[in-house]
Image 1 (cartoon, rainbow, N blue to C red):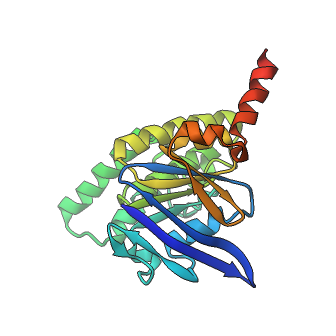
Image 2: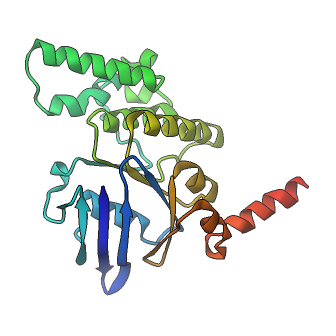
Length: 243
C-alpha cells in the first residue's frame, strides 16, 4: 500500500534522511523507534507532503505522491499536540473533515450526524460532545484529534509521538484505545516513538531510525535481539529489578 524508495533529505548540508526505503502493507502499523534528532519527524513530514525530499519517491497504492499537494493525499499527520479548533466543540471538531467535503442536502447532514455520533461513542466521548476543548482533559483532546482524523477514512495515518504529553496512566489507556481503533477501522499507518515498549506494543512491524537511516526488522524477535535497539537491555533491567 505504501512504498518508499530511496528518500533523502538534507538541511544546510546536514543529512537528515539517508536513502530510506521500505514497504508497508494495507491495515498494518509500522512502529519507528528513534531518539530525538534521528529523522523520524522529517520522514513523516515527507510522507504527508509537508516537506519535499531531495531525491526518491513516495508511492501510495502505486501512485507517485511527490507532486501531489498535502491536502490531496488523504494522509493525516497527528502531532503530540491535539491542535483542536478552540472555537468548535467536540462534536464539531470531529465532524469538521466531513463538512469540509461540502456534502449538501438533508440526507448528507443526517449521515454526518450519525457518523460523528457513532465515532464519539466508540471513542468514549459521547458525553463530551457539546464541550469546548478547554473543558476536557489532555487524553480526551487526543481522542477528539483521533476522531477528526479517522472520520475522513485516511489512506495513511501518521502518528508523531501522540502520547508524549500524557501522564503514564492516560498514556496506557490511549495506547489500548488506539490499538482497538486501528483494528476496528483497519488503519494503515506509521507510529513514531522513542519508547521501546510502546514501539513493540503499537506496531505490527518495527523499525529503528538512527542518524537518518532506517533499519526495518522482519520480526519482533529480530528487533529485540538486535543490541542497537536497546530492547534486550531494557528487558533485562526490568527483570533484574523485579527479581
